[in-house]
Figure 1 (cartoon, rainbow, N blue to C red):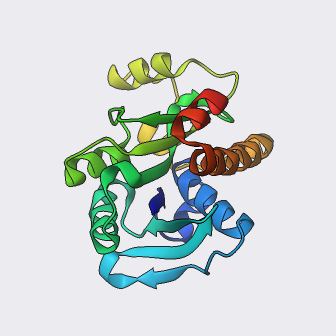
Figure 2 (tube, helix red, strand yellow):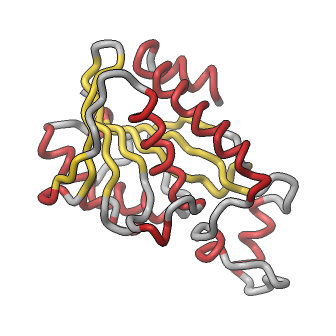
Length: 205
C-alpha cells in the first residue's frame, strides 16, 4: 500500500496557484487513473481522500486540508490510520528551485526551504519518504539562487518575495508547462509503482 499526498492550500482563494501544484497533480492522478473513488472528506484526518489501485498496488490518495505549513499533521494522521510507514509515503509538491516543467523524484532529501515538507519531516520524525518535486520557477528568469539571495538581503528590485510568489496564479503563457508537468508526474508515479523508484528516478530525473 502507498500513501500519495498532493500538497497545497485549501479554499478557492488558492486554486491554480503555484503552491497548489501538488493539489492539481493529485486531481489529475485521480481523474486519469482507472478504479479510483471520488474525493471524500475524512474530518478526523483533516484531508480529502480517494482510494484506488495501480497495477494491483493499493493507493491512498490524499489532499491535506490544513494550510501548507501544517501539512505534517494530516499526513501523520492518515499514515497512522492506514498503518503506512514513512518509506511508503509519496509527496507531490511544488519546487521553487526547479524550472517550470521540470520534475525530480527524490528520497530522503531535506526540506530545502519548503514549509510543507519541513512540517512533514518534523511531524513524522523521518524524511525517508519519496518526493515528486514539480518545478514552478519561471522559465527564462533569474536562477533561483540569485532570487533567493535578493530575498534574504531584502534587495528585491521590485520582485515579489518568495512567500508572495508561490501564492500567485500561473501566467497564461505558463499553462502548457503546467499541463506538461502534471502529465509527466502521472507517468512518473505509474513508473515508480510498476517498476520501482530507482527506475522512475533514472527515467525522469
